[in-house]
Image (cartoon, rainbow, N blue to C red):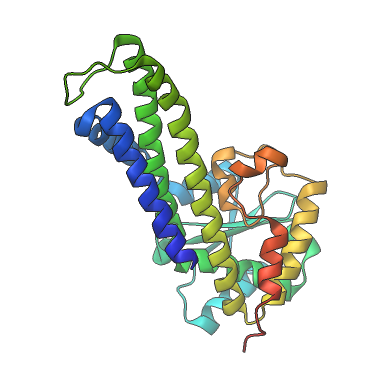
Length: 280
């Protein structure tokens, strides 16, 4: 169901791109914006592991409880062993990155070892390995590319409103008020859809992680602890562009801000996990 939802949301993003491109610059305008966004996001996708690890000063490890848990998950499920990194952060959290399962990275903060049992840590790292298996970095990059192209077109719409439109395939002049509205609404709509894709992938990673570690309650209990810890002791110097990568959002936000959250409600995630049957 979450896979189907992801496909539908990506289709919606594409349709928004085509519509906005046609309104502003015709097919040529949409194509140029897509190429520009694609180049930028391709670089981020290809080098995401190096960029994010350097950003959070991660150090690669080859032994210890975290490494052993990841190795156990990979051995049990016959998965390629990723590189494992430890982040010097007291707030417990974890993420996965890398362009494919053969070039994957999983990372966790030092603080996660202080509050989780070995079983709960297994649930968290299984969640991250599920992201790797489902190639969520690639899917997120595609969504970011399309959303980025829409943002570029929205910027073009601002100039179109000033100079009366450009690159249209018809002879009618553009409505400056409509262009301004388009410049405001289109990127917000694209961002909401992009966030919805991210939330769908989190549900899918929760389900996949429960299967990889063998017990959905391992991850459910871990999420409950991680959510509480991040509310009382949020991470410092978090780059908002990387917030979606973490298993628990490192950013504070409530009310209307939750509409723009990259993570689904924690209560719903835990409810779904606890509703799963125990796995062998």
